Image 1 (cartoon, rainbow, N blue to C red):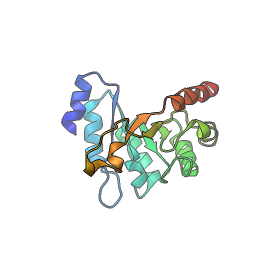
Image 2: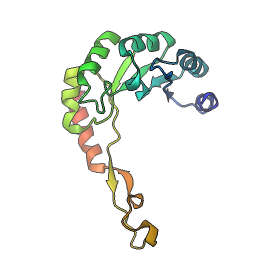
Image 3: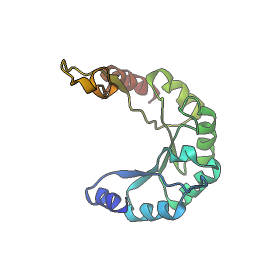
Image 4: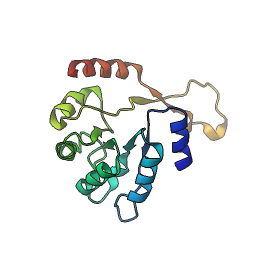
Length: 169
């Protein structure tokens, strides 16, 4: 990961996304700090490993102290709408020292409510949908099998999300 992170820096990327936990659910601070320092001045986002940490408020402070720029979180729930309470608390505690970015289940239908309830200003969404394969032929082993399907970006969902985002700006 260190090599990959350094390559991102050399290639001129804007930042990297990482997430290290120890077996006890605490942030692996030594590895996190090592990568943050290795890619400086690139921004570092700590990904949804955060949602599996044992002490989220302590982890937030640790990530601020090691220099992470952002935490991607669903508020320790399966989706951000379910974890909205914790996300709001984290954003209040962060107080601009680190960006709290809700992710997982963020859609145009809930974005305005998430923004209002959490006061967050950055959001993560994939806007993907499972598409059936256009193939007519499948070998017998692959007939009636989900491996034939694939994820694709839902164009209409992206257009709708952009409209909602424009109302928030």
